Amino acid sequence: MEKSGIKNGEVYQYAEKKKSWIITRDSDFQNYYKFHKYNIGGIILFKTTLTNKPYLFKILNKFWNEYSEKLNKKLLVIIEDVKVSFTE
Image 1 (cartoon, rainbow, N blue to C red):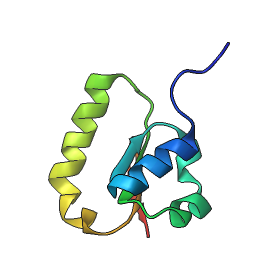
Image 2 (cartoon, helix red, strand yellow):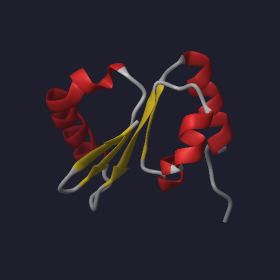
Image 3 (cartoon, helix red, strand yellow):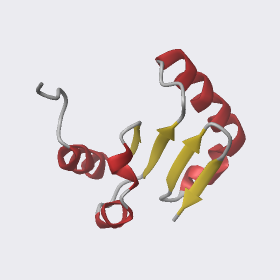
């Protein structure tokens, strides 16, 4: 079965061009080397048990309300069911 979507390298290049953040469920994006290789805003990676869109939006909204002040620098943010971790 063929995967749909664009390749991870293309996602990094697009985010780098726009200086934007990547928000994803793809655990390939927690690669620390690639995180530092590209000049992007940062990455928010969801590693939650539930993955439906309403749940992810709810979690993202809660995250934004609690941690938005931390997002002024490049971070790798991993959001799990019971914790949020930040790596520079």
